[in-house]
Length: 367
Image (cartoon, rainbow, N blue to C red; front, side, top):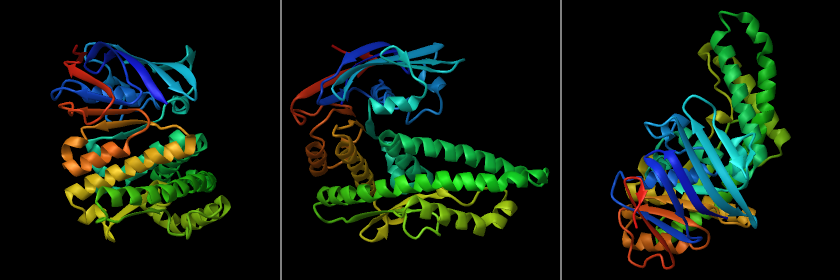
């Protein structure tokens, strides 16, 4: 799996840009605020039409433009694909693969899969549970289309239930349909828990191994999945997960009516990380936090390869500059295989072996 080339028109600070990429390592270098991360963001957009930095398409379009376009050639599963994304300020986006319009952005995940690590990913360890749920959801959605469907359905049901709980005192008749939403949420939620639990089980094994090697055997990273308290074993069959979620809903029904919000369900799940037996969120140092977050991302990459037989495209945004020389060497050894994009102010001297260096200045490719 690789991105062969990309052309940007009206994307961020790229007025008109095109580049071909190496199937191995691509180093994107230049001074700060020249567009290195913007280019990485465009490559990541190919895997699901989502940005790790923007809240909407408007932020991705150049300031003075009403439309932005990404066109890319990619190879996956021994086939060639032409991917085009058209973004508009006043209209819905349009996505095409080999000139055929896509119904959903999720269809892109079956062509290009990416794993991104950026400075903001320190939040995986230090921030609240929402950041870690987002990490799980983005990873699993690329691997399991049925999970993406269940998650989308669950969030739609959650929105409806939240409105019922918010407005039931003004309109008591809404409570007549509350049980129907609980039932549907439990069924969709059981699937969500099932996929998350099985992914985390594999992720924890890989991440622990990487963290040990990263730290020279000095740090032991443990990762576990935390879901609703009535679920004793998240790896149980989905019918048992459904029954446990229903019990949790029943036990929280009165509290939800009083709080006017949905307190029960996998939208409260978390991924708990510990280093040396201590909660990483509270006690990990800055270096341990960075290493643990990167271990999770590298573990995610290896799970993708094990599951699909192809390496996902790895995007590393300003990662090496914050690591000491020994840990830089470890990362470089670990990312062999597959296509990699790395941003930095300077290109390392020969550290990456074969590959390509792209110098970016003011949204343009320097000769």
